[in-house]
Amino acid sequence: MSRNLVIYFSRKGQNYVNGKIVELEKGNTELVAEYIRDAVGADLFEIETVKEYPADYMECTEAARQEQRDNARPKLKAYLRDIKEYDNIVIAGPCWWGTYPCAVFAQLEKLHFRGKHVFPVMTHEGSGEANSRSDLKKFCTGAKVEKTFAIQGSSVEGAREKVAAWATKHLG
Ligand SMILES: Cc1cc2nc3c(=O)[nH]c(=O)nc-3n(C[C@H](O)[C@H](O)[C@H](O)COP(=O)(O)O)c2cc1C
Image 1 (cartoon, helix red, strand yellow):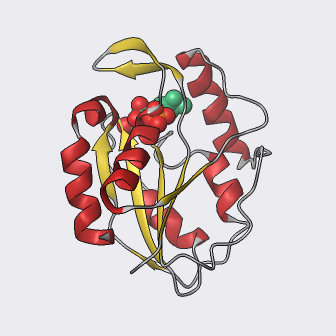
Image 2 (cartoon, rainbow, N blue to C red; image 1 turned 180 degrees about the vertical axis):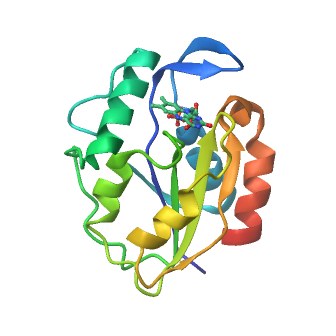
């Protein structure tokens, strides 16, 4: 049986859902990661930054924008050091200004992907897969990077079955 790992980043707190600011106890991407684990079995690794991003949505968008301009690599609370025991690596995160948050790249740079099967997953509020796949290809040298599974963040709560169907097809 294939071994599955989901590496994900997800932000709790204020988020923008269908044109309104709401408070989320659990981030959208974290829910997707859990649905995948529940459907096919997977280990989860959450990417967490030492310095938290602002809880305020607008402040967070500004901070993220600045990080992207600086091509920053924020320090993480813990780094996953190797992925040898896994066949399939799902990399899940929100779309922040057209790609994954810099924190995701800070983790990916520490890993060796040769021979792995990589599945990009992106939650978003309209941008779809954006640059997720092309950016992962830069960080996952030697891996086979599949098409992105993109899902609108505000639809995630009711999307357990949709996510499970995707996971079963690709990782089951
Ligand atoms: C800093 C920031 C930047 C964002 N940029 C985009 C964007 O460029 N395109 C888009 O469709 N959604 C954007 N969003 C919305 C998020 O991608 C969406 O709400 C996502 O589901 C959040 O996932 P999370 O709850 O797991 O963090 C942005 C959200 C934040 C906080």
